[in-house]
Image (cartoon, rainbow, N blue to C red; front, top):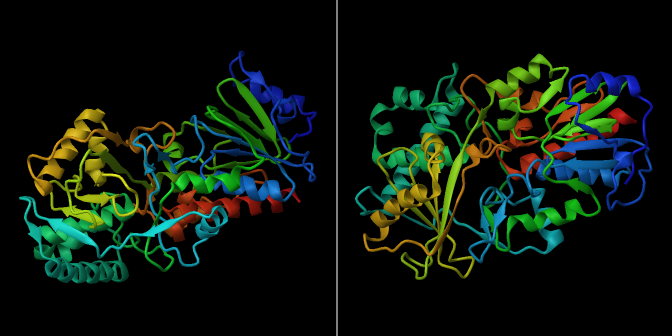
Length: 460
């Protein structure tokens, strides 16, 4: 893969005026990489970020004959698809499910790789109250229907936006304080959205779409799906992008810590949290519509602690456990891995405001805190796990959160405007640019396809 050199010394010189003198200037033409054939189109695209959105865009552009270079800030590809095998089995630190597999475009990758899936049934669960007593399935089912009806009433009946917590308190003050209802609001709604309910838009929190079918997990790991997207594509890791200068006639210059890369077009798939932090400088700044949308759309968080035990201390065939913790969002949902992998692994999850707080603590504290919840359910004599993995997406400098959500004050336009091209040489992509499927892998995947089409149309 080679990008032809440009005679753009004036543009390059102007760009370098704002750069450190030690920066090494490198056009893609000068990169000594193992690359496939030269671009048949003669056009080049830089993609910032090697998550599913970036890799999807890269694949489509490469297949269409464009020269592509992917710059990834971290030391590995996948973005928020991050499969960790340190426990001897695949553990998903980030994306964990294919939500609604029927007609889901991600299933094409699953079939392409011959991946084995396992259906996780939401009905296969046991819920405990804060004292460790089981709550009857009849009670959960009854309250679940009321919970769904109440949220549906709010979602379809609001004429003025407010926090979802406020709407619940206003419409059903007694029900909203019920322990089972409160648990569902966190374990279901905060989990689904990644947002604390006090920040979630009552008008738009559930206006996105979904594919049909029961959710599935990938038995051998989500990261296996990346292989067909990466074949033959030049990807540089440990290349955090610091500055992007773009001009409809001069093209694009992308600056990392020690290099500047040049191309005809750039697709920026950095997570919303990174865009919010302004860690990437855009020259000129992004349009006001884009900047306002970045500010208004929320970036949520989910925390996981995956624990591997020597022995099984919970019912083997129960897929999910719920705990009605008294603190909102605190370790109230658990995934049992035993039904789909042969290992005594339990993953504890926290959401919302608690997730943000717990991720500021060290890993040992996170484990101790999660184990307090485990022992409420399965007994005070439950031993510590042999090994564990803890996530902290809000603290990761290259994500700064788990996924986007509809925050109070934003609307679907704020998501979708982010997918609109900026001039003739820049586009954004990622789950946060697709309101219809935001917060999902398939949403990010589809956004990458859209950005690739924009780039191709613009460069024709």
